[in-house]
Length: 313
View 1 (cartoon, rainbow, N blue to C red):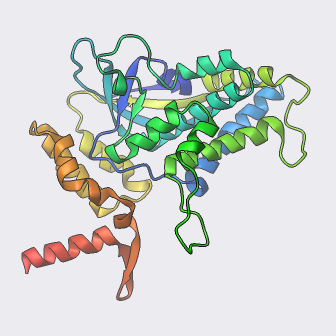
View 2 (tube, rainbow, N blue to C red):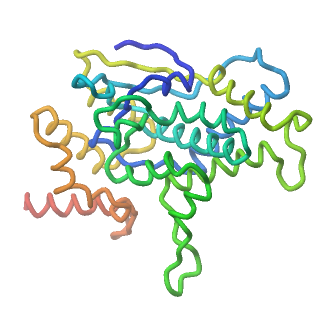
View 3 (spheres, rainbow, N blue to C red):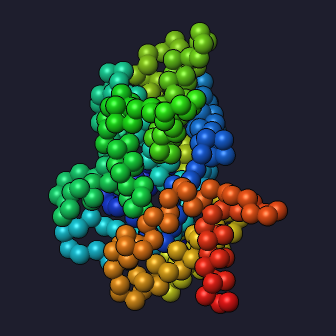
């Protein structure tokens, strides 16, 4: 494998599609455990830059493992995301929120510059898909494409208004990627405009200057490590090893990974197999924990236990 470091924006600078394979799980990051710590890291570097401390060490955001895929002539280069899909997806959502905040406040040139790191441009064989820098798993594609292409917070809210079931006290949660976008947009608003009457950092400078300085920080001060696999590397073994200490994988996640990697290697139509046989099994219903006896486990675990017991006697 080839290991090298790259700035955050350099990852998205190339005309390519970082494709999350079917055998990986849906987007699961949340505010408490991932979005907030990520924002605090970015906010700290923003504050250092605006305070004039530009000579500090770069901040490391994590590692990503990519596998080069064969791409027909005329198509956008494809690279499969073996590990780091949650981070890559979240960073694209953050960049979309930053881009839309810039446009909302009249910094159109900077917004256009940000857009280069969220969407591919130029000639493409399949523009509907090839235009995206990151392409998630099937169940996440609609909400992800809506976040990247809506163009503004208000347009996204129009697509995803709050709804509440009859007699329910609380509104239904929006899709997770929509909530991520709204979280980052709010944090950016509070950082650049102040919170509850507080004066924002470097308020003596025009907003456009502060936004440009922070954009340069995204380009120069936030780094990731890219691990490019070679043909002799086994993507499945590397995936399972790297995730052993991350967000716990359900048995259903491991089983899906194994099945669809095998299907892909055997030349089967993994997309069709997924739609016909597995897609509904990835819905949130199956990840919810339920109690059976003294144990509390995800529904998918219990289902597989009972299914295997019925087959094995």
